[in-house]
Each structure stands twice: as structure tokens, then as C-alpha cells.
Length: 95
Image 1 (tube, rainbow, N blue to C red):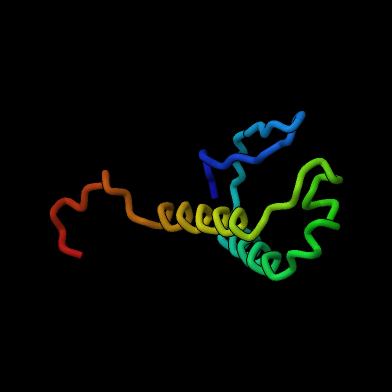
Image 2: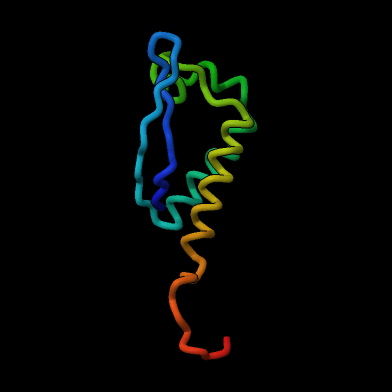
């Protein structure tokens, strides 16, 4: 999976800084991450105490709407990757 638009946030002096992160994932890895994010939505109280989710307390954990946006973005990118290229000719053959 490659998401050129993916941005991670870092809270520096009260301001958010965005960085681009490109991670190539297999379909199984992507599906596992999506499943973990969906499960994480079910435990909002645990997020505040999770040092991994907050980078050791350096930022607030993502809320449900932020998690939803990530899931939608990952799903959209995966579906775009699986679509046949519109630039590729089929030489007039019928599907």
C-alpha cells in the first residue's frame, strides 16, 4: 500500500506539523491494520493511557472520527490500486 497523501501529525509547541509517510503493505498487512483500527475504536478509554498511541504522551490519541478517516483513506487507496488502469488499452476487446 502506498499513500502519497498520508500525513502523520506531530505536535510541536502547540502546532501540528505534517510529514509524508510511504509504507508498502501486503493486502494481509493492510487488512490487519484496518481490523486493529476498528477494534481500537471500541476502546476509547484505553487510548489516553496507551503510550504507543500517544508517543509517550507527546500528543493526544486519535478520536473515532480520525480513525474513521484513516480507515476510509486506506480502503480508498486499496480499491484504486486494484482497479484496472484507465490508460491501459484493451485493443477493442470486449470484457
